[in-house]
Image (cartoon, rainbow, N blue to C red; front, side, top):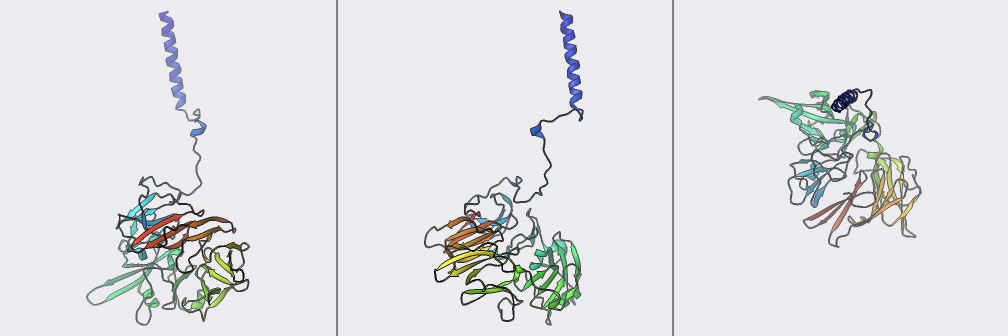
Length: 400
């Protein structure tokens, strides 16, 4: 009996060894089907990630906020003045900055090509802020060039007897694509040496392809080569996103191409809005699309639709309750803000289907403003020094 037990024990030891050897052989290893992870062909982005590195959800009452862009927005929370949070569409905190958003909202921009302008410089989607000093520059000019993937930067040096001013171009990786040059600076300056560039978005600036044009000095710059353009005719027409919606006696007549946004007398008509009816409201173009509202005065009814760059309807105009319109290119927001504020609205998709209705009235003493960007509606309610901010999705439900 002892011999049998010893033999059985030896046999079990051998079998265990064989199983162990087999488990180390990749050819014989067969993982459980549920454990197999297929490679993803999706690019990770801030909107899809849960931002596990902070482990923090936005908490508290939002009192100041930016619109969403590229899946992110800046917000300030009541009681935490002096700190600005960058959040995603799930309310996750992506990063935070020690900047007061409510008193510095004019120095914050939306994300464009992965960067947003803040008061110190440009920050990326991780919260890393790159200042002019980081790249050997004196100042950044946040103009229309960021949409083309470029940043114009100034380099100023001086000694006891003279001052040198140079202008160069950086890409969004903060690499010099055009080295700083005194010649470029002098070429773009006016007769008084003034350079008509600004640290915030200037409506007198625009970019067509790789060509930046500044209306103040009536000159352009090839952002890729550094060549200065002296003739406006060499640049071409601005893209439809920069067309101006012109109105006359509360009726929008069309979209115009003009370097002077305050004077349409010498503008070129790009899209005629009078051919189909009376247009009482028209949005800017976004991604080649704009939203317009027709007013049938006889029936006192409003109809909303979306048009392309040729002015053609993308869907048959549908009836809406309100008259003030805006779009982000995918959705249309029509509200009762015709007198500057309101508290109700309707949302339509690009097929003309209504996706939701807004009614955010708290009480009659609040003044409301709406904005739509990146598929998210920003509702700002103000009363004296009190502010409330809401984010709604396209169905007009709380975003988070």
